[in-house]
Image (cartoon, rainbow, N blue to C red; front, side, top):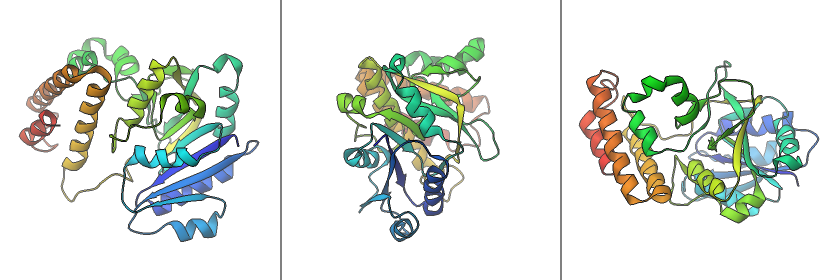
Length: 300
């Protein structure tokens, strides 16, 4: 088996079926399998998959165990030389799996552990495709000092980066929406850290991969549609505090695991200052209560 495609479904039944269909539609010239992990969705997707795509392997969970842990379940039974993590709201538009496979099997690319495509919206707009590891330097610059090196910051230092040219380039991490990973590297570094429920799980894994001597690249010639956010927790409020808290907690966890407790503490101070500056400047006035968000950051 060349590639094991892993898709985590959480209340995105129709999108997941479309995502599976896109893999079958565009993938030729390689051997692949598809594994779907259902994170206790309210509406069962199993009968539909069994009817429409009988070869797809299904792992049903009794509860929502999060993105990373669900992918780990798929990785355990995967038989492919490569693992392709595909979001349930992401769809292939070309034979990207063959392109990725051929690129990764070139002898000169043996140290490339992860590659990914240029993510686009359904209307063709560029989406976040990769990023740099969070750091205290990045957190400090985000207070507002990034304006002095704006272009460099958004292309080299930002956590979330939109692809900006057509060149294959190194990246600290590839977004988990379309990460094509060498399985032998996962066997060496271990899969996702189960402590992360959502957000920064692919960033922390990529940090371990880089420490092991490998790196990631973005291949802009390949375009994958990503309808970002459809599987995330929704609230009936104008501001999603659940999502905000989940993001802040995972970000702090990344700092603590990768750089230590002191860095994690300093990062919370810096992100709190950023919140204060942006709120005073008017950029955060309509995005939730500042004091509630400050409490979330400091106690995450």
